[in-house]
Image (cartoon, rainbow, N blue to C red; front, side, top):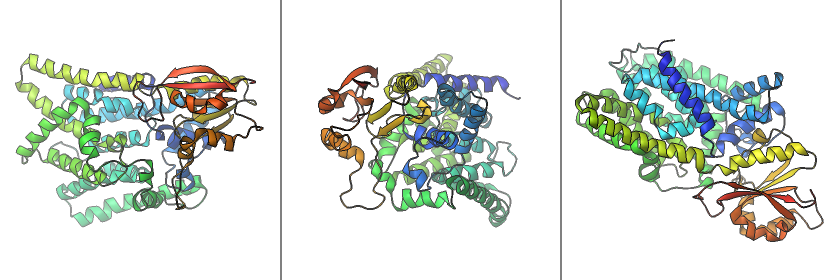
Length: 491
């Protein structure tokens, strides 16, 4: 394998991140991937409303399901292996995408430095997020794109990859629409010829395959692309999970995911804009970044991970700028800049990967041990914001569980309040309603420490057994510094 030494560097970094990134990021890492695959293979668990409504594609899920099935047949399906094996699989793909970036960039040392030293890619590159898969595939597709002057032969490989990305993550069109238009402009053949003979056949084939897979897995005919657009764009269900101001990506999201590398990127962008004729490819990439950020800014619901796939474009521009700059700069200046960038990335890598929001993952280890001791008598009640923890994908034992749900108002009910909000409005009243005095209480209650005083009446029948550190900086008033486990006194 060409550049094997470089690939092994990337592979070591990505595999290390599997074990060194020990924190919780967003629910979709588990509830839209591992939980679904676990339910598909082991026939128990919980599927969120997105799967009952058919807005999610099973195409990426069947890879994890296949892995789980093999482990089950080999009798290697322990909880620990089920947790780490999908992350190792994603790490392998991310390492290959890093190698693709290295070959595409052509800046050698600076390419390795920039992609390996990106704190957000380190933080997300081995997570089982659809966005991590999307970013890795995007990087590979970018490396196959026939950029003028890069010596890459005209081929349809990148179009196949783009089609796959689009049907598993439709919002990827915000990145690939301008790039595909650029491809049509630079292509030597006529636009109509390329569209009819390449784009259309590939798009239709991948679309048909996607519909077939999703219909079989969902159990009825479904076009997940349409359902995704219907709920997330036309009905704007995403706003139920939070709304940010229009400028959030520009003022917060984009600078945050770049971190210290925002500075070389801005410097590089200035150079590209001043010398547009010399840097046509970089100009197209900048245009793509601006277009994507503009369109994403029009959507009310915003998250850091939504713009993860812009990273390879940003790092390409930055690495080429740093490479050109370093050829003229003094050795001391290069070392100073490299050290500042390195430290500026390592700090968030360590803190966000090892410290911040780790309690809701660590608690699953304790709950797994508790559940295995007496599964028939164990019942777990999670009194936390919905989907604060993984569930059966990390327990891997079919014990009774209950957690606060946060279903959006899918039926347009007037004055609708989801279950989690109902609970936090009056915790004691909710508990009395759902667990009458003469009824059976759960064997264990899992909660954040900030809630403890509000449900002291029911906790009088429990004993605290675990206090697990979660974060120094709780994101909301419903999240505490510690995760607590309380065990029923007669358990």
